[in-house]
Image (tube, rainbow, N blue to C red; front, side, top):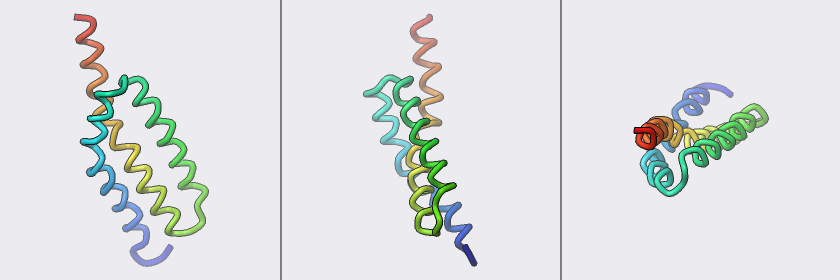
Length: 90
């Protein structure tokens, strides 16, 4: 990598993260939080391993986009899961 490639690779993560946070909430309503969080964590791990295995800039960009896509559902899922559990307890 050279020039601003590293900055582009860091920035490209936030585009799918922002775009897919709301659709992730909609999926979270359809699936159980435990299922959704488990699925995105497995996919998140696979994309992270993929970042370590790529050999060119385009592959890194593709993996960063996938990482942003999978990580978009983590923050909402972590916050809705305790509220669902506490609603069942109380």
